[in-house]
Length: 133
Image 1 (cartoon, rainbow, N blue to C red):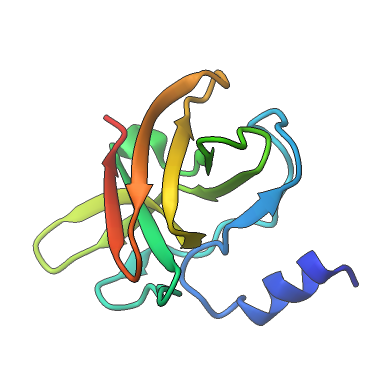
Image 2 (cartoon, rainbow, N blue to C red; image 1 turned 90 degrees about the horizontal axis):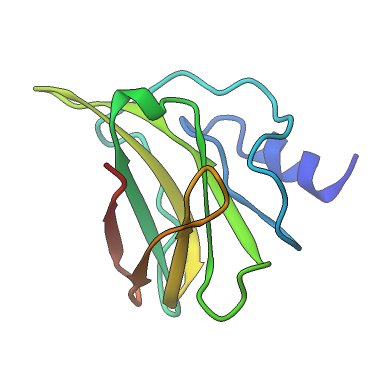
C-alpha cells in the first residue's frame, strides 16, 4: 500500500475527495477511485490553522466531477487538485471544489486546458473563495 492509498483509506469517511499534490504538471485527466456522495451542510472537514488555509472554488453544475488544479504562483509544477462536488445546503445546492490544507500564499488556478484560469490568495487559518464561472 502506498502512502497515497493509505491517506485515501484514512480519509474514506470524508464526504469529499481528499486533495493530493502532484510533483509536476500533468494532464488534468487521470484515474482516481469513484467520487463519494455529495456533501451536506456541515459535513466537510477543513484542515486549517497556523500557516495553512483552505480554498473553495465555486463552479456551476456543468463542472461536477471535474478536477481543478492549483499551484503556488512561483511553483507551477507543484500542483494539488480536488474534484468539484455538489454541496447540498438547506435552501439550494452549490458546486465547488474544496482544497485543504494549503500553505498560506498566492496560488494559480489552472483551467482545464492547462492554461492559467486566474489567481487567488490563501490566508492564515482562513477560507478563501474563488469563482470559476
